[in-house]
Image 1 (tube, rainbow, N blue to C red):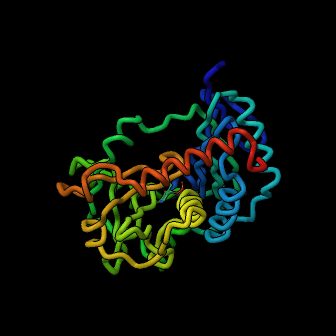
Image 2: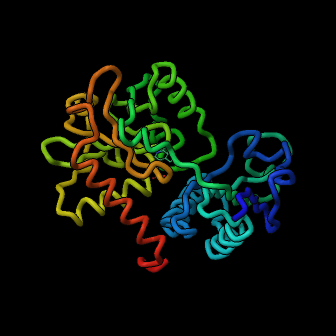
Length: 294
Ligand SMILES: Cc1ncc(COP(=O)(O)O)c(C=O)c1O
């Protein structure tokens, strides 16, 4: 099977070479855009409805016209079909479009819709076996009173700098605190800890992206009778945790075994983390087989 990248831009599907956006697009000039990233399982987009709902909420929050989700889904399926990869990475982007340079929304000439499909590349299996190393960085998560972190906007500089700080410290992912000094989330992931058998994750009110995988993993945990809590968490909760893990659409459930130089729990992926990773893998298999209605 061919392995290709295809990009839908406002009604036309391009290959990589012709997939271009004008430099006057405000997505390029200002990060004036919102987006979603998802993966396929068995060629089927995972949690598409939830991703599109979040995209619509993000668009609303940045005062973009509401996208027509039915035609957006159709564009996504058409792009996936054109790319024809066994499994795809999919990125859906809505920008405010091009216009005369200036911040004023009135200068924007019309929103632009982009759907990008390329071969899915997942983190290496070794990372799941040894577990990720995270570090709590000084770059804080944007407060909700600024661009609300619940909005998946195209302006990721804050998170880019957080990840850069983590990389300098030799870590795989950054953990950002909120302005109150409590745990928020990773640069492109949500954070969970397991303490005393309870699966805990920072509450949405702490200021973070409501991850689609976060929600799915909470559902899977509850369905298995595991106690879960969405609550404020101090950084000490991470250091003292029995287990920790990250979630994202591309990572699924990724164990965290080190925070800086300290081991989390026994320093190996813990049993609750492994159970939830297995549950998520099962969920993906169900999506792949069409068993969950997709
Ligand atoms: C800041 C941030 N938090 C969390 C996540 C995980 O979200 P999801 O599970 O919807 O992929 C992402 C995904 O890229 C992200 O960018």
